[in-house]
Amino acid sequence: MPSTNKATLIGLIAVLLWSAIVGLIRSVSVHLGPTGGAAMMYSVASVFLLLSVGWVRLGEFPRRYLAWGSILFVSYEVCLALSIGHANSARQAIEVGMVNYLWPALTVLAAILFNRQRANWLIVPGFALSVLGICWVLGGEQGVDVAGMLANVRDNPLSYGLALGGALIWAAYCTVTARMAGGKNGVTLFFILVSLTLWTKYLLEGGGPMDFSVEAIVYLLLAAGAMGFGYGAWNVGILHGNVTVLAGASYFIPVLSAALSTLLLRAPLPLSFWQGAAMVCAGAILCWLATRAQAAG
Image (tube, rainbow, N blue to C red; front, side, top):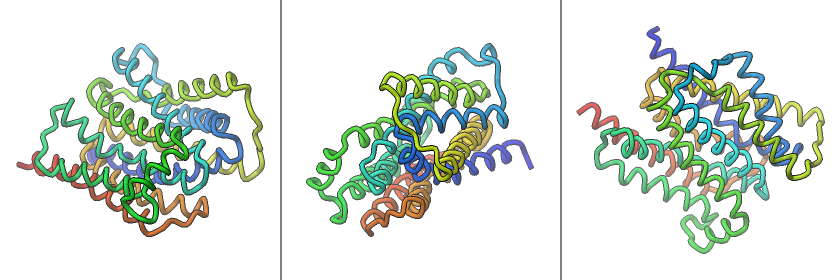
């Protein structure tokens, strides 16, 4: 199998692992707290990455990638973990995770704006449909309901704001990585920086109780494995594989994530949520097709 195909296959594994992250992060935060649980997850994930991906000497990284990659990756991971950890309920955690899944469409948009990726007119309805899907999810059982959507956001502006900010930041990270990485994989370093950032926040907040039950440890190991190995696989994919194929596959994460989160968190979702999730996927696929069709032409 050609090396590009192998790297693409490794990147596809990340899609499966990431689909479980929302439910696992929420499960860990219930036992260990939003900040403490996130700090533990990234610490354990860093160990997994050191054992699997290994370490790359700092001198081997392009300096621009080292600086911008670190800032963007750490910012995104903190936004993701805390947005889910601070959710007021299991269902809200799933909704917050769905807001974060605007990133595939945003990544394509960023590639068009900053990496000169060519695209056709499908990018407009694709992006609009993704945004409409998020509004449909946040509107509750009524679908697109502005009053209901605003009420949901007002209930927990921190979580929803962090999720949206994270989606924007991750799109920027993917764009920066493609342009500046020079083939280097900095995910191990980035995870260590995330864990240090979260532990600093945890200590500044005065710590907090952690319930290290058997269930908590199992969820911790599963979450750390999904996060560490998922991002390790994704970085291999976007650095050496077919980015367009990976972006296309990633568009199915919202539905897969919602399904796994429903099972893990025992939080049944209304039909309107699944309709909104399908819109997010469909919109992202249209964005992908917009770039694919243009490339083929």
